[in-house]
Image 1 (cartoon, one colour):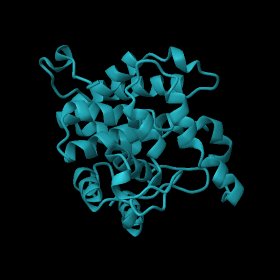
Image 2 (cartoon, helix red, strand yellow; image 1 turned 180 degrees about the vertical axis):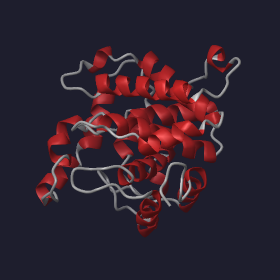
Image 3 (cartoon, one colour; image 1 turned 45 degrees about the vertical axis):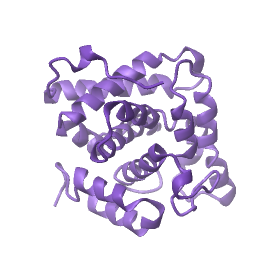
Image 4 (cartoon, helix red, strand yellow; image 1 turned 180 degrees about the horizontal axis):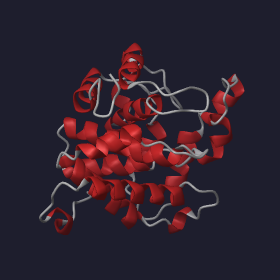
Length: 252
């Protein structure tokens, strides 16, 4: 069913202050710490809380709150579980691209919820993603199961929009068929998954990982452009236009 923006939230909406924006980010981060922790009873996850947080992020980005984007660029988890910040940041980047595509609010909500939960299947594979060395072929094939695991987990969450299940399953599919788990191409990939895949790659590149240092935004864009056949040009163009080669806070 279509997700609608609460009229209470939209009434008198205004751009949040820097402190209020930081608080919104931290509250969403706290939510992801609860969802991505070990031994979670997924049937008890509060989808209303998830929706409310994404709704506020959509509202702020729609109002042009640039602080949200700045936080997504600079915020990184300080512990071993990088997924907490990664999930929030990918949500922000995905919604930003959706705005560039002219999405109405209901589509921005579906996209944002899918993005926030996109790595819900990854905690079981953290022991692999946190390696400081290159993964073996066997290890890489194992970690490629996380979208399948994620979609299976989302099936257990009550009252969750079913589109998120499809999007999470397809998040690593690529336009040229080079992705996984099914090697889908072009129009066979859900439009949200195409956006999410690009946002996910960009976020990963501009943040530290155990096996490499972070890339500067310009370097990250160059990396994406070397894989331009994997992503739609219009999405890359929007990413560049909305975030920029030298976003606020960058060293030039």
